[in-house]
Length: 100
View 1 (cartoon, rainbow, N blue to C red):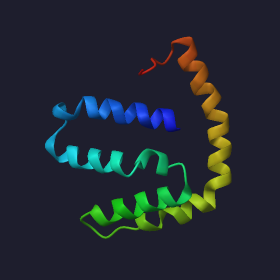
View 2 (cartoon, helix red, strand yellow):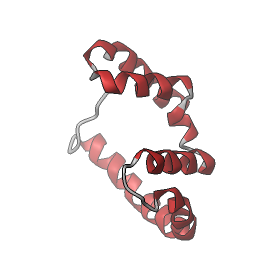
View 3 (cartoon, one colour):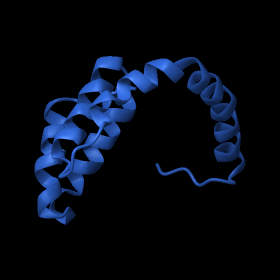
View 4 (cartoon, rainbow, N blue to C red):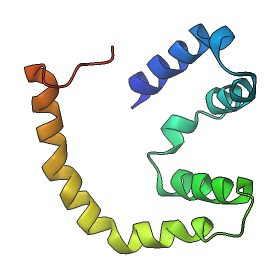
């Protein structure tokens, strides 16, 4: 995860001047707070849901989404463990183009 996050952050730094002005502030925040790595933990995901909920104009239940994630965790994990090897195989075969 660390290597992936560092590579993404470097790409974002490189593309900084090409980013829309509204995005540059978020990108700086993302890098400064190591947001991508924070997403690997439940609390990092909960903070992301709460932050998105606060930024939405209308009342919404997104700040409670972590409860749904907790409730469905085993099913989501099972689906992921089935899907991810298929994704890797598709990338390795060239069916899906690797980004880096």
